[in-house]
Amino acid sequence: MRRATVLLAALAVFPLTGAYALATTPPQQPVFADGEAQPVFDPADVVRETVFVRVPVDSDRDGKDDEIRAVVVRHRATDQGVKAPVLYRISPYFGGGQRIPTHNVDVELHVPGSTGPDGDLNSGPSPRDIPVHADEPYYLARGYALVYADSLGTGDSTGCPSSGGRSEVLGARSVVDWLNGRTPARDADNKPSIASWTTGKTAMMGLSYNGTLPNAVAATGVQGLEAIVPIAAISTWYDYYRANGAVIAPAPYQGEDADWLATRVNSRADREICKPMLAELTRQQDRVTGDHNRFWDERDYLKNADKVHAATLIAHGLKDWNVKTKQAAQWYSALKANRVPVKIWWHQGDHESPESRRKEEWQKTLNRWFTRYLFDHRNNVEAEPRVTIQREDGAWVNEVDWPTPGSSDVSVRPQQGGALGLTAGTGVEKLTDDATKKLDQLLPANRLLYTTPAAKRAVRISGTAKAELKIAFDRPAANVTVALVDRAPDGTTKVITRGWADPQNRTRLDRTEPVKPGERYSLGFELQPMDYVLAADHSLGLVLLSSDREHTLRPKPGTGLAVSLAQTAVSVPVLGGRGVFEAAFGR
Image (cartoon, rainbow, N blue to C red; front, side):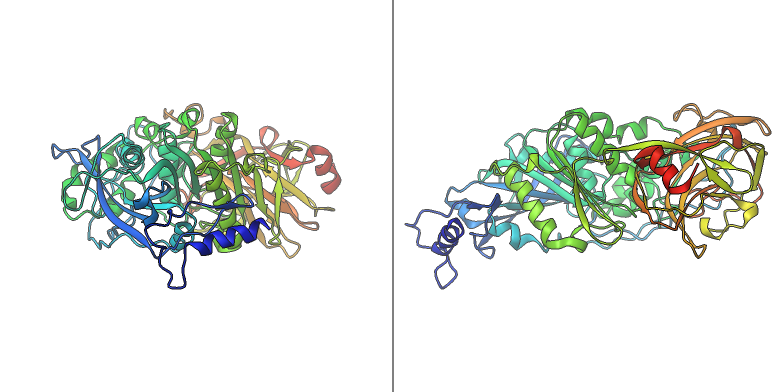
């Protein structure tokens, strides 16, 4: 009966002509049913306007405050006194970009006291207007207003891009401030523009860089930002371009770095003004040592997770080697610890939205999330399971938390002869670096592989594996890579997860310490978080290698590594812990 009432209310505002009722009729108000905002507004009857929002920063150093160009799309009822919450998307990509070469990665590794190569970044723009998002009618019909914006230094915004730096975050935040009356804006005719049509309640959402900016703005604690949906998004940029001191790449984009990305998206018409600032990014990011420094600290939103109050719905692909799973896992963990309403969707894709895999359910989840936190309609989403995971067979399951409760670390150890088990091996085994081959193409001389027996039952890995190595090098610089793999009965292997480290950063991320050839060092680091079911009859494999062609710098082949088996292990988070591991593989 309630659904019928809702439909009648919707039809009341749409005569057969599809136009609004006469002005004497009270304006349509949002309608809710089954915990969701309902489609009662005409998505074609809207107001579109462009505004330029002032940003309290001068990132292009022209002596004037920067401006963000934003496009507002709102249903016409907002001109009749109806207030709308806002779904806000900001992007550095709306204005197009430049075709530029990446950094050369076929280089020798840094040795303290030496200098490293610089990247050559050229330009060539291709600007375009802000596009209309495909889901625009869906949200307009349900009473939301939409705002699209060009990030600083892109499209018709002024300022300069900074790959997630302070100025870029302030630029994105300024739109939320304008929607809440805290900063001025002008319209296309240079007249003051006041957002009197909105409640001020705002949600930010987006994929990749477009999802990273919501994380960044939420970490400022800005009032009025009630919800964010970061999809395949970054929570700290150091973990995007570096790993435990090693310079790494977001696959499949070998040679990218923070300066490359900022130059790539610098699409404002007079982009030459940004060249000095972009040159500073090249110096500050320190592509030579890979050390953590103030540049990366500025782009660490995780350290300000305690400022976030926006309800956060995270989505991430378990096979995403561009923005890796650590970005989502650590953000989820930090927000949960700070009692922020948070939910995560893990899917079996790579760098994509779950919309491509489960469109209707994802859209319904988003609408329920926004209904709760933008319209403040109590639909109890905060009491629902925090975790939705797509399993390897495509099925979706809901769980109370992640990593899945009941997982505990099992220390697996390599043994001479290629076995992987619970007891420590003895002796030293060696490999020779060869970055000319991918991980799954390396010869036995170039990697060490250890495997369990075939599993008697399926084993679920849920959480973050950690490597502890005792290792020596015959040169003063080397990459170190560790991977867990699924080995099928036919001998083919598939990477489950991997991690990288620079032994020069073995004690501190912000300090390079020399490596003395022949001396053994303890090296500990995490692999990328994962949720993976190893099928029965498959083996779990541990691969130790040096350079990872798809991710690390690629020095000439020949560096030798020697691994002490007795002091090497990887702790693997297994559902059911050691008992399940023993039942599957034996002692």
